[in-house]
Image (cartoon, rainbow, N blue to C red; front, top):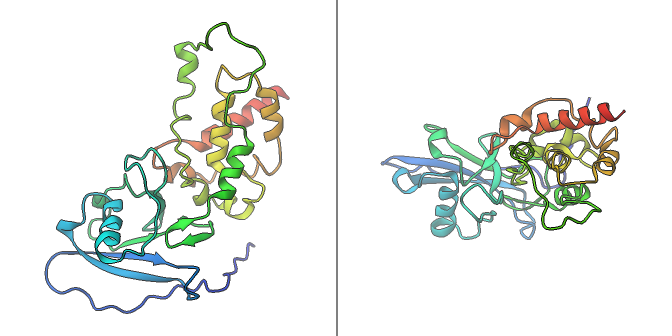
Length: 256
C-alpha cells in the first residue's frame, strides 16, 4: 500500500460566500495559496455572468484576474495550445486552459486546481524544475558525428515517423496524471519525457540511438510504466505517450 501524507499547511478550506442573486452565472472555484501569507491553502469562489465568461477556461481566469482579483497567479502565453504554459487541473482532469472550451462543463461548477503531484509555487503555478531537468537528461537534440555536405535530408516516410511525437508541447499534463510518476518521479522519467525520448530515437537524422537506448534501459527510468493509460486519456494534444513507451521497449528488445 502507498501511504500519502499531507505536508504542513496543506488543508484546503472553503470560505463561505453568499451566492449571487439573479441572472445567469457561472460559478468558478479556484485553488489559492501564497507562500508569503503563512495561511493554509483555500478555494476562492467567484460567480461570473455567463455572457462575460468568454469561450475558454483561460478566458474565465483572465476575467477574474483583470476585474475581480489581481493577485490570482497562473501561467499563460500563446492562447493557442502551443506553449503548454497554462496546464492545470480542471474538474479533476489535467488540460490546457486556453484550448478547453467552457461548453465542456455546461451546468457544472468550474473547479480549477494546479497540476497534481507538483510543488505549488503560488496559486495555479507549479514548480517545473524537476520535470525540465528530466527532459534535459534525454538530450532533446540531434546527435551525430558525420558532417553532411549540405543538409540532413529525410524521405516522406522517415518524416512521417515523427508525427504524433514532435507535437508534444511539454505541458506535463500526462506525467502529472500518471500514478507511476506520482510514486517514482525521482527516478521514473514519466510519459512526457519518454515520448520525447522516442521522438529522437525515431528521427532518421540522429546517429546516437545506442547511447540513447543505453540511458533508458533502466528498471525505473522506463520500466515503471504500467500501462495505466491516464497519459493518453488526458493529453490535450491527443497524443499517445503509452505507444511511444512501448516502442522504446520494442527497440530495446530487438537490440537484445
